[in-house]
Amino acid sequence: MKKYHAPLAAAVTALALAAAPARADTLWHFSYAGAGVAASGSFETLGDGSTPSLVEWISGTYSDGSTVNGALSLVPTTHPGVNDSADGFYTYDNLFGGPTRVSADGLLFLAGTQEIDLYLDDVLGITNVTTYDNGVTFNYTAVNLTAVPVVPVVPEPGAFAMLLAGLGVLGAVRRQRKSA
Image (cartoon, rainbow, N blue to C red; front, side):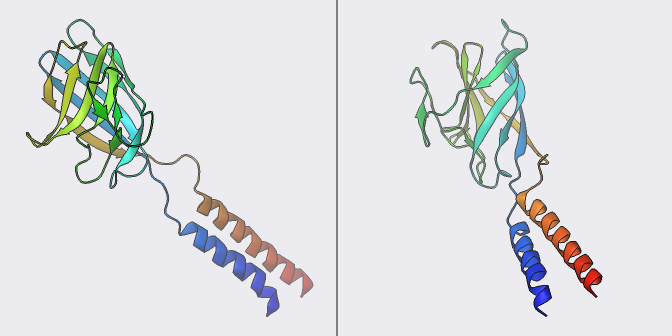
């Protein structure tokens, strides 16, 4: 009976590792238009959006009358929690997810010289965008958001553990047959 202890222990360990929840990234698509400004793009969060997660990157294009198809770039957070933009006009946390999806501090990204803040407007009760261009332009526009789960390209550690456990069990069975 002792012959089965090692393969059984390996199988139990592999199942425990496989039961660990997988981290699923989510790709979010957004678009907005109004007051002469239009933009669309994508950003990615760790997790499925059920809890607030840090935005990893943002990309897309914008048009504002003087620029057509300009690039969007995320302003990174310098420390966890609420950050201030370089000019002090915005606060941002670059977190996305949870019941409101966007906080009142929101996401901060650049569209050319414009700072764009994607945030929750408590007064209007919608996800809003404010555009600030060197103290000149303000645009308030509702934002459309859609989610696309990202399928991980690299297998989870639990999958590797299951593979190794299966190979161990096959080896043990083969060794047992040879000795019998």
